[in-house]
Image (cartoon, rainbow, N blue to C red; front, side, top):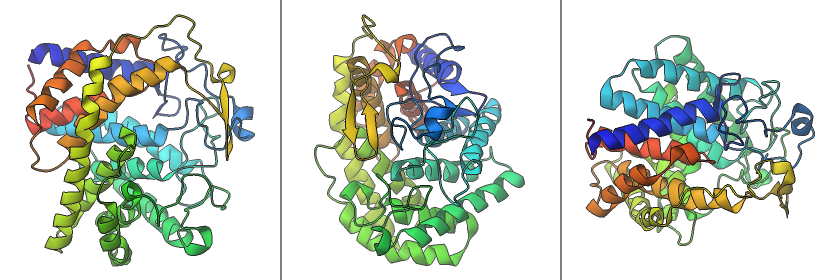
Length: 396
């Protein structure tokens, strides 16, 4: 079985790098419109569409809304794979992802702004509305890379310190009552999904997480003071996990808790509170794993992957193309179960229940990754390598 699980994880790994990753920008994009790598991203917005902020200022539904998230997820996965195997080839993979992360910071003229993605056509244009979840995964990936042997002590570490300093400074400057605690769009105005304080339970830890990473990477005590200003209110307000949320929302909370648990070593009570919050969210994720039992291969009959031809719904930042039902099915039966297992595996010392381990194996065995449309393979790969690193799964 170990060989079969490894082979399936490798299928997902290779498909992600050949169909979703583009060397022009060193970024992963959200979905594919063709299995042919040369045409898999033909649907992406054109330069003029992005510059006109069409169809909405977040790029929602266009295939370039979550590259910052995916970069962070992939960086953590690469670090996990290296930790589990010592495979030196992971250095080249990490370098590629890091180049894409650095590009995201380079293309914006607004200091500390993390664009969601970059237009493939010119390697520069981007939507002006980011989100707290882009920052959550981006900063998490930055933190993992910084502490990995895959990162050297030279320019990249200096660049990482500067990037997190710019991000922390943006938060300090913009996340104030006058902006309704928003870190603001690139143009400096409060936007959609960028509020960082006085937020829902699962979002409370994002701001102190960023300040804690800033403190951890730079040693600057100012960021420690800001982290501590928010820490206790954040951890108390984080629990209990709210019911009825999509899996990604709970998972992002777990991603925000992981650095906080690792960094907070000076206050044992606060460390324990972060760890307990992380455990509670991971426990809540168990409900999503059985969704893989409803998996079926993609029905491509009548499938249209050009977002310009999709139905739209009016949002506060513009019209949002609505994904076809096939993508939603893949999200529910592949991505969310993988996110659920990954979140549980991220909690230090928490065993993975046997039924959850069995469901991860089933997810790997049954999924036809060659048929995938969405970036769900990213999370399956991430769950696999964290499971190997934890000793839950063994290599052949």
